[in-house]
Amino acid sequence: MYDLPPLNGLRAFEAAARNLSFAKAPEELNVTPAAVSYQIRSLEDQLETRLFRRLNRAVVLTDTGAMIFSGVRDGFAGLKRAVAQIASPLSTDHVVTAAISPHMASKWLAPRLARFIERHPDIDLRIAASNTTVDLTTDKADVAIRWNLGDNSGLIADKLMNEAVTPMCSPELLDGDLPIRTPADVLNHTLIHDDTLVRHWPDVPAWSKWLALAGLPEQEASAGLHFDHADHGLDAAIEGTGVVLGRRAMGSRDLEQGRLVAPFDLDLPFRGGIFSVTTEEKAANPHVRTFRDWLHEEAAGSPMGAAIDC
Image 1: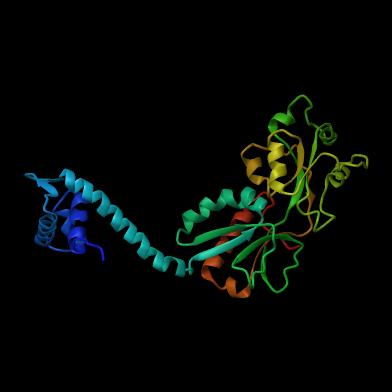
Image 2 (image 1 turned 90 degrees about the horizontal axis):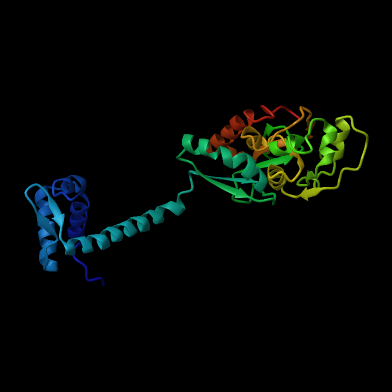
C-alpha cells in the first residue's frame, strides 16, 4: 500500500500549481472553484502545511508547495505514459513498415521523408534498412523498395524508376590539377566502382562498358576502388577520392545540392528498374496505398523521370 493523499486532492493541487490560479484549475478539471478550494484545503490539512500563499489577485507556491509540486507533476506524467503504453503497442493500424536497402534509404528515401511526414502525420512509418530480401508474405514489412529485372511474380509491383549510370565527381576534382573535360580524362583519376549489384547480375553497367559507349578504345577498367554499398562510392567521390560511375537516381540529391557533378550527358542505362512491391492483402491497406502513391509521386520527380515499362 502507498500512504498517499487522495488522488482528487493531488489532481486539484497539480492543476492549481501548474497554472498558479484557483480560477483556471476548475476549468481544466471541469469542477467548481469551490471543489478545487476544498480539495486543496483538505490536502493542506492532511499534510499539516500550507502549499500556497494566497495574495490579492494571485497565488504562489510556498517552498513546501514547490517541492511537492515537482514530485506530483512527475508522478502524473509517469502515470500518463504508463496508461498510453497499454494501448500504443497494440494499435498497429497506422503503422507502415518499408523494407529498403541501406544505400537507397540513405541517398534517396531519407532526404524525402520530411515531405511524407508533413503530409501524413497520422501514419507511423517504420524504415527497415537491410540488404536481405524480405518475404512480404511472412515478414512484418508492408512494402519493399527493390531493384530488380521486373521478376515480381505473385506480388503487386509498381515500377518507380528506371536507372542509369554516368561518371560523377566532386566539383573540385572536375576543375582541379587534372581537369575533366573529355571522357578520356576520367582515366587520369581513381575509378570508383559500385559493386552492389554485380553479385546478382554480372552484366550490370560497369566502367569498361561506359568507356566503350564514350568511344574510347577497349580497355581493362577494373582497377581502382570497389564498394559493395552504392552510397559509400558516392561519398568517396564527394570527398574527391576519384570518379564514381554513379547511379542517377541514387546520386540525385548530391547532384542537386552540388556535392557531385556529372560532367557528361552520356548515360549507360540499366535493365530492369526500381520497384515498389507488396502483397495483394497489404496493398488493400489504405495507409500502405498512401505510402506507395507517395513513393510513385516522388519517383516521378527524380532525374530518371516517371517510370516506364521495361
